[in-house]
Image 1 (cartoon, helix red, strand yellow):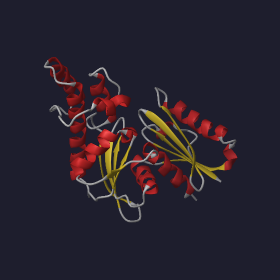
Image 2 (tube, helix red, strand yellow):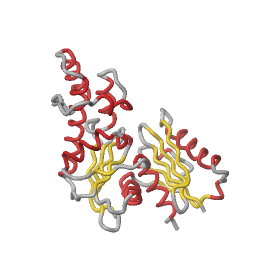
Image 3 (spheres, rainbow, N blue to C red):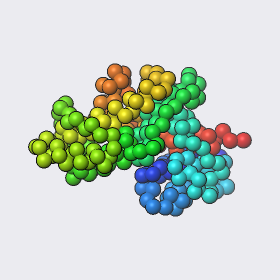
Length: 254
């Protein structure tokens, strides 16, 4: 039997086909219709691997759009799924930092990979991918180009945690001749400071995994490592941690 986990985030929909390992995966924009995105992801995983619904044990959905997935046999919170998915990627991991488009979260695991503590920022854009997107757009740049923008250690001071006010700060900094590199570095520092506040509210343990779409950024990962004074791990499948965890929960369903 095969197992599918689908993580419908505010920005991206991630799907994983699992058996004894990850067999296939799909990443696509969530768009305005999370139900459609989830269905298209499920259909892709089936069709690309010549499978039918009867070949699946179960489909588990997670993420902010999970409740809209009528095909799902079960829906599970992001915390549980990221915990299981992160532990699968590296079973030495004890702390997971996930920076998503809509929220950011810190998850603490025990030696068995069970969630023992977590903290979440889901009340405003501060410390999220949306904050980064809005502020980087103020520089007339794209998130995908972030690692090429930051070229030195010097960082501008971005004091506002509000994305709207931070944009105003950035416009003023540009008018004063501050470089895009310094401003981008300041934006990253602002996000990491917000993550550090979440870490202070949890049981922080070393062996840290960075997940979410921003985990592909070497600059952010390295800055997190410096701030935490410990190595922060990230993998090509880090963005799929929630979907992997959902697939594992599917596998373990009775």
